[in-house]
Length: 125
Image 1 (tube, rainbow, N blue to C red):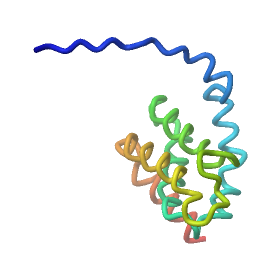
Image 2 (spheres, helix red, strand yellow):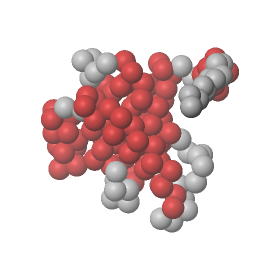
Image 3 (tube, helix red, strand yellow):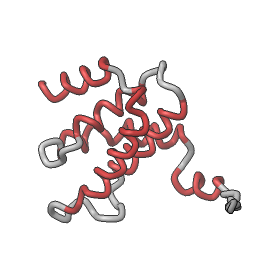
């Protein structure tokens, strides 16, 4: 028995107009990422991965698809309003952590030792 699944075409323009194109998201991440990481680094267990992903996303050698994935997850991380608000103890960063974890696993092949070393250096300072 062969199963045929029809895929519906997704109109991406309406979503992009809501969240901004890649360049707008990258600017948003550049403006808010470091302040959020510094504020919550001790509270969120995925801080090292987020910082490594940031360096990967900013690396000119990283493929565009990996950059888009990283920027999208990092933009979600720094959004003040999301599925579970960050001010809720324990659960507040669960959705952010999930977004960062999935993106990190998806682009891990592009996250170099240099990106990880820069993240480690950031946390050592």
